Length: 150
Image (cartoon, rainbow, N blue to C red; front, side):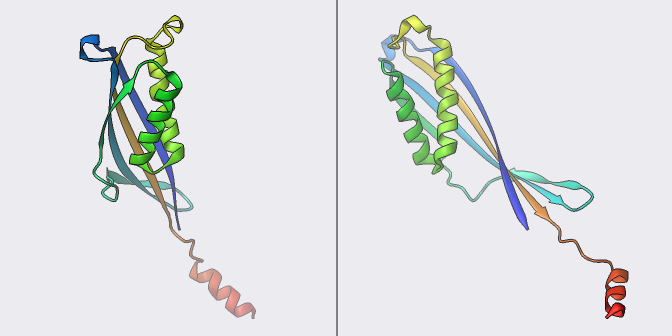
């Protein structure tokens, strides 16, 4: 039997972008997907290693130009574009939340609507953990006792 869980790590670096480059903020998102396999039995969990996930599309780079004036529009656009690439509503929303929070952290509250375009470099690492459970086999002695009792 196999079960899985997902670990999400989002790192956002935000700097001001020179207004001469235009009034649109630039967001560059890199996606890194890994699989991490574990073998689990009754007594222990053993790591079998990790490797890049080759079952996903190679679209590991997303470049967005976003207007700087409407925070709600920026958030909805981020979420929509991420969903187009990731095909996962919940994951897209979580990443968009973290990017948006980083943007809010660089702009003071009195700057709404946002005036300064930003350059944002976002690194997303998605690690899918796969657990393989070994079936519990009855010991031969217990099987023999059951057969003898009948």
